[in-house]
Amino acid sequence: MLRIRILSLVAILLVSVACKKDESDFPEKLATYQLLCPSGIDGCYNDCGTSSGVSSGGATGEELRAFNTCAAQCDVLCDTSFLLLAQ
Image (cartoon, rainbow, N blue to C red):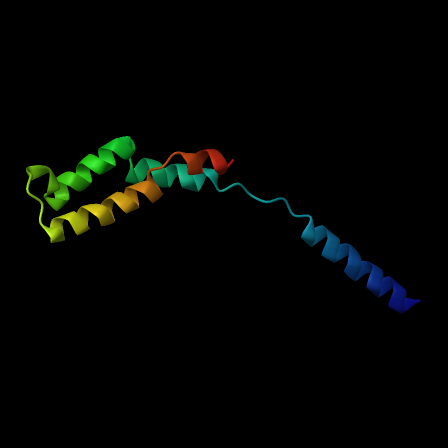
């Protein structure tokens, strides 16, 4: 009888822990977007062009590689679709 009570108690505890509500990570993602992309994805691309030297014309391989790396980060961090999917 004691064994059944203990198993019942353990089962209730497992169910109560398993039913915990998932917290939304939307506020964190929104804060990241606002901090890293205040002027949106186009502004991020413009900043990449300026910082890598590509916008001055006649880009070297190193400048182009720096621009592509920066633009890839813009694609990941400044895309608003992840904000819509976070809800």
